[in-house]
Image 1 (cartoon, one colour):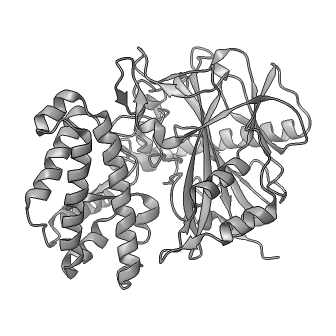
Image 2: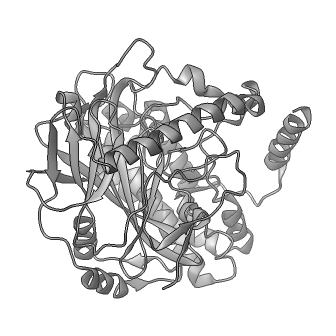
Image 3: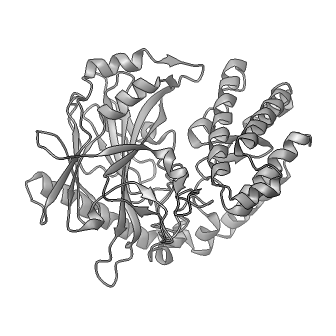
Length: 484
């Protein structure tokens, strides 16, 4: 334990002292410093992507950070990579400035948000030209474009994590066994104890051949990332949208869009069932694969018993589909927006790889699904109140209520009662007011505010070991494609 602590402290110290070519202070670096100070002071920082130190016009996420070593020797790939880092910052600043209170705009000296955005774009172009023209700055960028994990090492040290893993592993193993048994019972025909309400996306999905053509015609840049048109993106997201069958006891089992009311946490409008969606990417053996992500939100996970540590405001389910280059599903996986209850549902086209460290959480697989044409929708059955996913099956017919779609980025600027906007998440990526009692028990795992709802890009999904929902090698490390 002592050696572990000393090693960590030495790494932190040496990392802070490592020599780098510092950026030269200019009017533009001062401009970004002023903006960042105003944003941080008002609590409007967007936490989905991470600011790159020394490059105030760039931000990185885990997917883009995974390219940083590969692009060093390829100027075209490096330029495309920087384009994408800059796009992350531009998007984040758009929402930050949109959410910035009027009094903070006055402190900057510019009250027109469009002027702020225009000047930021001009400064980004100026700083980029200077940085890309200097080899030492390009090297510094590649070194700096990293994303910290969402585990607090200090908590693991103070909580004696190596000792805490024993009771943690008992609890994790128990939950996994109960989950597998639950899926077995449902597959055997066990019925829900309350009424089930069905929600459908409507429309007709693309057939397998059409989905394949759509992906194959997508242009690939130097990074190999498919460039989908807005129309093609829409078709893919529509095709793989699931059917939700929710065991419904009361309003807490109805989902809808978020908004800011008088509560300390975001509220849910259950009058308009809505699923948020986003396009994401992962990497598999040098190729970039498309992922489709769908999230639904419930107003609350109600308390069930005195010792219910997981109850609290706001709850939900995140469902993701990973496609191969031919538009065929490889793996489905789900979490709750807290990052909890990560489950994988591989198709018959992949095999689970063994865990290199059996003591870590690797890949809970409650069920394996056959390879089916995308034109057949997947049904997700969700339990009442706990909102656990209890069954996954392909649809055989039925009729339900049509649900709507919203872009996941809309959560970064929700409407408020006074006509302004505010992110659903705080500067730490956590939705305010959604804390759970379980945080007092699980803090030694290093997961901050365990059980609270989180923004995309901030989902730690394991208590044992380290794992994030958006790790770019998450699927590659755990599954291998079975060649026909």
